[in-house]
Length: 630
Image (cartoon, rainbow, N blue to C red):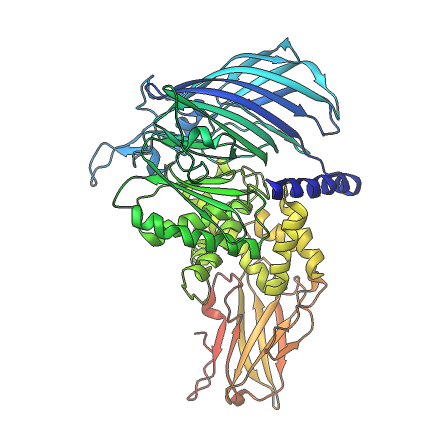
C-alpha cells in the first residue's frame, strides 16, 4: 500500500502540472459496493455508492453506465455481430455439423433464460434524488436531477441485480476448465468522459476504457469458495485460505463469508471464485506479493508451481524495462476463456503446456503496465495496449525462457506482412469493433502494433526507444495517454520529428517498400541506385559487406525527420545526404570499386517492415557480377 500512496502523491502533482501546462484532466470515481452471491443459481444482488468527481471543464447533465452482462443474451448486439461476422470467435460458437459440412452456431443464441447474463438497475439516486434512466442494450442512459458543474462532486446510490452467464467470452460461470465464477465486467460501471466526450460504447466484442478511482468492495459468498481478486483483502484473518498470517487459526462462522477488498487507483475491479482453488504466494525481489490460484488438478500442478519463479522474473523484467510496478500485489488466477488483463490480476486458462502457460502470463502481466497503468482507450487505440504488450512480452519471454532469438518480434512481423499483403487491411485508427474481420483486428492490434515499437527502434535507435518507454511510464502512469502523447515522448527523447511515423503507420495503410534498383561501376567508386516504391517514408540504412570481410553502414536520413540517428557502438557508420520523400529515387556513392564489394543490403536487421525483401539485397557474383536481388 505504501508504494501506491507515494505514486498517488506523484500523480496528483503531475495532474496539476499537466492541467496547468497542457490542459490535461481526468475524471475520478470512488466505488463502495456490497454484493451477495447465490452459487446455486449464479445470481447476485448488490448496492453501489459512487462518488463522481467532475474534473472536466464541462457541465454534465447526463451520465452512462456499462451493463456488460446484458451482451450475453440471444437478442444482443454482441450476438448479432457474432452471427454476421465471417470469422466468428471459435470460443463463442459450436459446430453442430461435421468437419466436412460445418454448421457453426452462436453459443449465445443457445442460451436459456437461466443461462443468459444480465445486469439490472433497480433504483438509482443522485444526492438523494431519484433519477430517470433507460436500459439500452449494454448501456444505461441516465438523465441527471442536477447538472454536475466543473470541479463538483456528486453521489450516486444504486441497487442492482445480476445473473452470471455461461462462460462464453471473458466472464462467466462453469468454464471449460471447471472454474465456477470468472467475474469481470460484473457490476454497473460508469462510462468514461474525457476530452473527446463520453465513451459509452456498447459491448460488442472488444475491450474497455474506465475511469480512474478507488474501490471498496465486499463480496458475500458460500464459505467454501476461494477468491482471487483485484485489491487488498482487508479481513484475511476471518477468511484464511492462505491470505492469513502464517500460524493464524481461522474459524469460519456461518454458511457464507464476506470478503472485503480495497483497491486504490485502478479503473476496474475483477474477481474469480472456485471451491477447488489452490492458493500459493511468492514474494518477488521488489517486495510485490504474487498470488497464484489454480484448480486442484494433478495434471496442471507441476506447471503452476514452475510458473511461480518465472512470474517473479517477468515482474523484474517489466520493472526494469518499463517502470516499477506500483501496487503491492499481483494475482495470476485460473479462469476466463484464454487470457485477459484486469487491475492487479489476470485470468488465464490453466490447462496448457508450460511454455504456453508462461507465455500467456507474460502477455497478460505486461498489460498491468500497458493498460492498467498506462490506460489507453482500448476501443479507439487497441494497437497501443495490445501491440505494446506484445512487444515487451516477446522481449521478456526471449530472456526469461532463454529463447535467444535474434529477432524476438519475428512472429509479429510475419503477422503484419500477412495483413499488409492481404488486400483487406484497415487503418489502426479503426474502432476496435468495426474491423471487417476478427482476424484483421488481431493482426492490426497485436502484430502491427508490436511492429510499431520494434520498427521505432530502427528509426530512432534502440537506446532511444528504451529511454522512450521509461519516460512514457514516468509521464503517463495513472493517466489515459493517446497515440500523440506517446510519439511526443519519443520526439522529446530522441530529438527527431516523428509525426509522419505515427500518421502513416497508424492512420493509413501505406506500406514500406524500398529497393536496390541497380549497382553500377563508376570508375573509382560504385553507384547504388535506390528506389522508393511504397508510399510510407523511412530513413534507409544500407549495409555494405566488402570482399575483405569488413562492413560499413551508409545511413540515409529521412529529410522530414530533421534529425540523424546516432551510430551504434562498434558499427562503421557513414551519414549521407537526406532523402526527401517526394523524390522516388536516390543515388549513393560508395568510394570503392564494385569488385571490392561482396554484398549490399537495405536494413540487414530487417526491423524496417519492408513488404518486399526480394529486391533489398544485391550480391556480387564472382562469375558475372549479377545485380539480381537475393
